Image (spheres, rainbow over the protein chains, first blue to last red):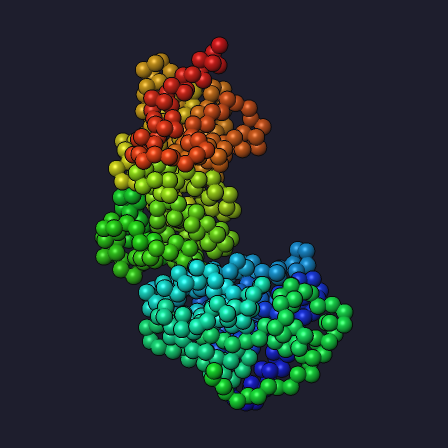
Length: 282
Length: 309
């Protein structure tokens, strides 16, 4: 990705963040901060990494993307909409009674949604199944799964990690949105050494800056990191990224932005300058 | 039933290359032939049932037709949420295979007994619940599952279950099998206890009681037509299941009676509400719960005598 392209994608990220805030506001829903932390990861995936075609969302050869942290689906909905998978009116109806887009995605709720998620610890296993099926059916699509750090408390995540290593699923890529917070606690105090855990489970593992578009697209653009091993990216992020008063404040795992908070948050996002585009590997 | 299952699955896999088998590290030796014939389609998912079911769901999303196999409690209760969310919510053609229904793993203790699986599995939307009555039904069930478009729970016995059907019956998922007619009472059985129901019917015949015997191998959806016929006989109905009384076949038929505003004498013969406290074989544990042929026959005659009074 060139510097110019990264600059354009930064503006896309601003749009996605503004959409998230408006959706949460109109829908009256929580999970703003964990949606904001994975915006660059989703934009990097959908605009640069994934082999997908918004006009043919069910194309058999497409790369699969699973949002295992389903509570961040506002970010995915907004990204899919920006990318042209579906019209904006679907976002406008988000979380309304009878709407297609709910607080956690349901099966086939919109083009581009591969699986229903919401309960944590499910996505990586489904992803491993897709990766295994791709191999059995001799298809070359890759499967990307985005997990939350709090989700890595779930035993099933590590069951999937062992399975993917056992079956050498090097077409499976896990990305952990490591924003350092679960719903009630700081996670790095107990998850560290986090990358070493994935490495110990047999995954080729790298740490990246999960807000640096150039770093994201470069790293995620050429998996596997190592032939014969599944790949894990530990993406360092900030919960609530992009809105100063939401960053690292657990309240915004729960609160819905309204009134002056909403106006200030959107103003901050719209005024944010493009960050340094230097590639940085942590 | 276990061998009948693998025989049926091998035949199915032979003609449908989408069929795959996952096991939670159980089935030593019995899958060797399947694994040799279809190496890529045999997957030992390890002792990790939650992941196994999620993997099966992912495989089904890509068009495969996976069967996920383990001992019943591990195949159903351990990974219930994966079955609910990943398989049933997405309405995927995944078959959950529980081996060892009821007390089949008797000496292994209550951790391995399966007395709750029918109850919990039939709460899941989209899921078809099939409990074959003997090895013949089990093999036919597997072949039928090959044509299902949604998820299935298949509850098997273990090895050495008695063969009840001397000739292959017409087997259709959702259609109960009447093994013999009878005008004095109706015995409706599900799962591997069918042989007990038949044996009890034999004892009853010796006492001049003619029992209709039905294998209700599909607990969800229930066979309404057969149930209506049974109720129309206007004689006591007995449900026989190697399962807790709470939520199993008897409960399901009770719900059906309420829903259809049918009134009849429904008597549930099932395991009571406790864990087995002592070690024991399947037959010993069945006897503890009133589930031997003699006990069933005795229960039936007691009810019939009370009705006659």
